[in-house]
Length: 501
Image 1 (cartoon, rainbow, N blue to C red):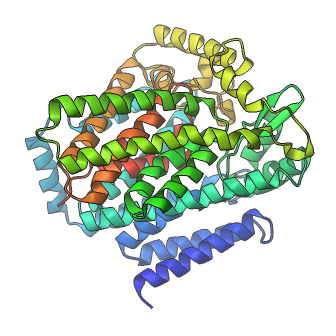
Image 2: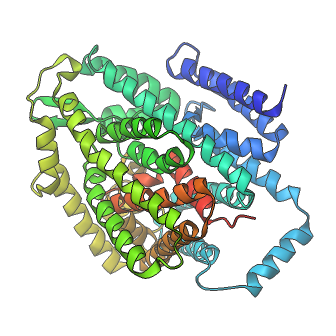
Image 3: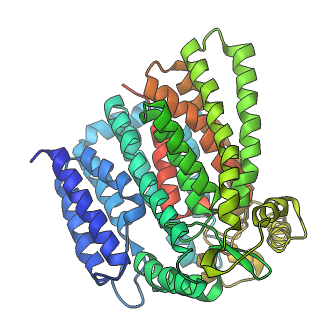
C-alpha cells in the first residue's frame, strides 16, 4: 500500500472512531488507544505525511481521559511535540549553527522571528507580577506548543510542492466542521432545547473536551443560543466549545478553498455554504468586521491601481479584483439566513424579525452583551494604566475583573484580543504584537505581488482579506486563542511567511 493510501485509510479510521466516541457508541476511554495509535503513526510516518495528517485532524483531536481529575489534556499537544522533535533531530548541529549565524548576520528589527522572540521574553517576564504563576507557566507552554508546530510548517513549506499539498489538505477540516454545523442546524427542528443541551452539553462536548469544560458549558453558561425574551435561536458552534471560535476557523480556511477549487460554479457553491454557516453562528462581531474588510478591499484596490500597478502583474490584479465578488456572496447569504433564524427551532415558535433584532443589537450599546463588554473594556483599560509594563501576568486576566483565575476557562476575558495582550503582558507586548501583525500583512501582500503561481497568488490574495477579517473581529473577542482556531491560524501564517525555494 502506498504512503498516501495508508494516510487516507488511517485518517478514515480516525474520523470513524472520533464519531463513535463523541456519540457515545464507544466508551471515551477508546480515545487513549486512538491517541496511542496516532503517536505510533506520527513516529513512523515521514514528516511530510505527519504534518498533512495533523492539519486534516485539527477539529478531531480529543482530550485524553488520563484520570478523573485530569481529563482535558488534548492529543494534538503530544503530536505537535513529536513533529517538532522529528524535525529537530533530522538535521545535525552544524545545520543549526549555520542557521543561527545567518540569522545574526542578516539580523533586522523587522524580522518576524525577532518579534516573536521578544514576545516570548515578555511573556516570561510577566511571570513576575502574576498572581497565579502556575497558570502563567501553563499558558506559556500552551503557546510554545503552537510555536514549535509553526516553525516546522514554516521550514517544510519552503518546498512549494509541499506547501500546496498542505493548502489542499487544509480544506478537509473546514468541510468537516461546516458539515457538523449544518447537522446541528437540522437537529434543532426535531428536538427541544433540553434534549439539545443533554446531547451537546452533557455528552458530546464532555467526550471532546473533558468533564471540566462541559460542566462550565452546562452550569456557568455558553454562547450556543441567541435569546430575545422567550424566543431563542441556535448559534452554530459545530465541534468547537463556542460560537465565536467556529466562524473564525471557517474564515481562515476559505483561502485554501478559493485557491484549490478550480471550477467556478463549485467555488461559488462552496463559498456560499461556508458564508451561510458563518452567519448562522450568530456572531455579530464577525458580521460587523465584514464592513471593515470591505473597506480594506476597496482601499487595497485603489492603492494597487494608483501606485503599484507597474510592478503588480495584470493577472494578480484581476485575481484580487475577482475576490471582491465573493465578499458580495456573504451579504447575499443573509437573505438565506433570515428564514432559518425566524423558523421555529427547538419545537418553539418565534417571530419573523429575529434576525433583524440580532443585527440591530450590534449598535445597541444598552443591549446586555454590549453593555457588559463596554464595562469590561473600561476595567481592562484601567488595569493597563495601573500596570503598563508587564501587566497582571499571562494567563491571569481574571485578576483584572477581580475573579477567580480558574474562570479563564469559563470565558473570563477582555473581549478584545489586543486589550487582553496588554492587560496580561503589558503595553510593550501589545506594541510588538501589532508590529508583528503589520509585517505579516505586508508579507502576504508582497507574496501576492511577486508570485507567478496561480494557487499561491489566490491563496495570498484571499489571505489579505480573511486574515484581517479575523484580526478586526479580535476587537470584540479573544476566541482566536481557542486551540483549534489558533492551530489553523498558525498553519496559515506559517504558510504565508515561508520563502519558497
